Length: 532
Image (cartoon, rainbow, N blue to C red; front, side, top):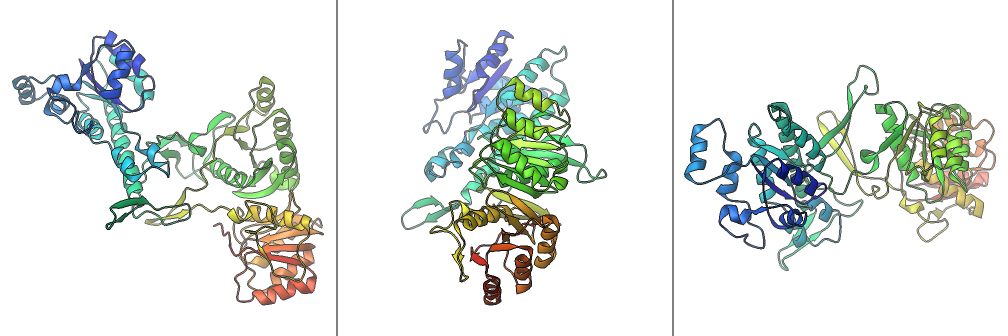
């Protein structure tokens, strides 16, 4: 039995290949893989010894040879195929273990020169994988080190690997090459060519042009019990072939609690996105993808408590996000009342912390690293089509206000120092509330949120209803401009003393005049944050 092994990901390679060798398999390999196997004390036959040709063109040509592909593609049930192997002295290949050049890793580095990216385009590897997958009845194909143990177990079966197992490996292999090609096509669509100089340069920046072609390749993590409603099917997918490692909720760890639902995941995503806006310890409570309470504090535990108390009625049964590892005090704050789930970057490694969380055994506890995902794309399906956009970030509030990149004061009265801090806080929250959105806050906690209303005045009314007389001396943020002064009048009547909004209405002058009438300070960011 012959195994052809050529992998960029060498995780578990030597133990797996050693197990094959002990079962009498001959190992054929190339380049770095052959060296790794030899260093592990294994006997390796070089591909050049099989083909009779040396590696050529700086390694660009190694396995592209009939003595390799003939051995993979020959159908054991076809006498003519077997005769052709015998006539040409070709040994059958029974196992192909290949994963591809790390193109995705190189592409993730914006500083990678285009010519270096091109060198990471694997030629022989995809050909080997596709050939083995095509002949799956006779050849096992493995592209993921996570499958090594299953392959060894299948080889121990009296009748050998089952056909269903062989086909599943083939299906995964084709998905692996498809994801690889998708990554290459997407990256090349971001490159511009200057014919005069011969220079190729990557052009896409966060917020810039989107590629001409997208070919998403998704693999199922797991089925979900149902979708938004019990009559809807649902599943959880991640992008295939992510050489950089699964991140965000694609790489989440569920530590305890009931099975995650479709709506849990949507709410966890909303919580994680809002937490990315804050460097200081922060917490959010989410209900139906909208924040109902947000707070920053000296500690994550205090932030959790204050976010929950901002709207205790809505917070009951909510989803909590916190941007610090869960320590014992935070765990106690989380378990002080009923919440459905919490997402955090990590859990402090402590038996006491885990025991505290486990006291609420049904509470889902999820850790996920979302850092670095801010500049990626958002995609949604509509009937018969896709919509893709660059991800929204509140970059104009990344540093303290007032500042060179901050909003513009348009009223006679400028905000006080405390109002500036509160306006910046409110603006970062408002961007994550469904439009039309109006948010009342102090400098470190929300007081009332009006979300998803059909008019901006209704958004104010919804927030005032939530505020229950607590809004005197607050500031307010509106995710988009005020089309009429009535919304601004309603904010003033509720007790707000300062307002932040993007501006851009044909009636901006009327709204500014209304703010001056009420003695409000108002600032314009010049940038709206709709969220549909």
